[in-house]
Length: 101
Image (cartoon, rainbow, N blue to C red; front, side, top):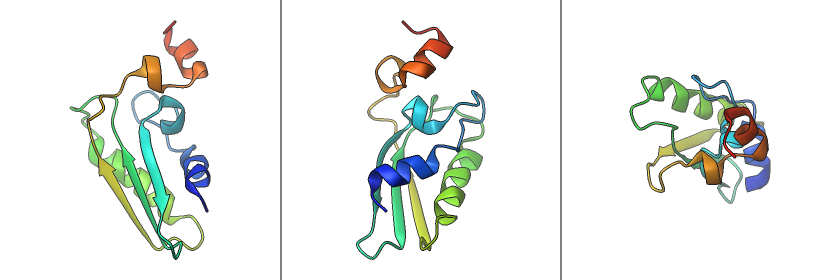
């Protein structure tokens, strides 16, 4: 599994308020796998630093990572720099859906 495969694996995880994939929103900044392929590390942000369901959201990402065959450990690091900006980080489809053009 490489970083692109990790991102694709996370695609079904949705922002709990917007119901849009965290990948399409551009919330995942980095994804990597340990050399032995057993640990996944993800660096991500939230659409808002004051997200009331942040813990559940992060738990959903970690749970999804641990569902991948062979991954036995996962860490999700939450950051707020750089600040999430849908104008530059979201997919074109999401921008269209959100009316950002």
